[in-house]
Length: 370
Image 1 (tube, one colour):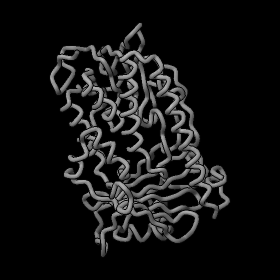
Image 2 (cartoon, rainbow, N blue to C red):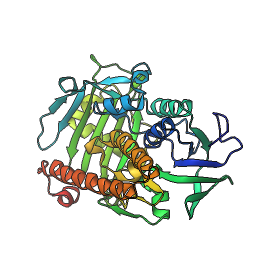
Image 3 (cartoon, one colour):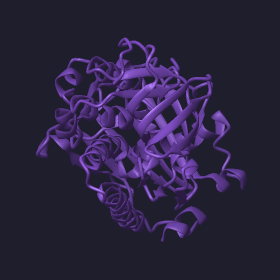
Image 4 (cartoon, one colour):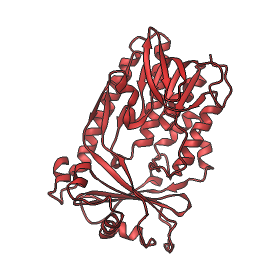
């Protein structure tokens, strides 16, 4: 067991479980493991003070956050309520889903940096250790892993958890294949606060389809707003000039419902961020002594609004697989891998049905999805 202090690894370098990544998936894996008595270390880079994309949290996260013991703290952390989703999809008119009418109530528009920091703080407070850095290499030696970080630390762990996100760096290093279904990317900008406040503050996310893809926008705590254009990477190179902030802004103004939501802003942001947003999965998502969780196991299209919920859910299930394996069930890892394959297959069917609802355009982006 680890004898180090709460702010680092201390002198001990041997742990029951090493988690690469300290986002929602990594913390959701570490928390139940620590509470079950395992020694756990999370290895991740120091968080950047820059803004994070991934701000909407669906109401279905409530029971998962409650199981992790962090739900009560979320309500007092300065996040804004999300009352539902609106979409101009398959037609010009908006359709709406009101979260408040569902079984879990409203969701959240998150301050994502604060949310991730609070999860990590709760994980460390439970007894997990955190080490600033990144895993450079991991090699299996009989019943344990020898891990080397890019900062020169050498650690040992009985189990390895890949919570590195879409890159799935560790899963690929230990032999998993990374299967991509598309090349969707997000060109994102952070707006605000606006010069002119709207007559009423909306508390819903909005999606609007276009010829080349679709727009997404949502309000954030503090009066800011996220605005993202979604298209395929090769279409950007072929002429959809969304990397130019001026063109990006003009395209947003051409989308009527989006234009209404950003009416208080007079100019585009100075800088746009380009982020991978395609669907992908690791095959397998687990093996002897390791599991992949979150986007490393199953990365989904932002249209599905599953990102953080999937991170939390797979973290909890991945932790249970490790505990079951430790208890002597030789089938635990294979069962987890089969479950992740089934989860991703179900998601792909749902995604295909969602895209088939939009039939207004015969363009490369939509032809690929029809």
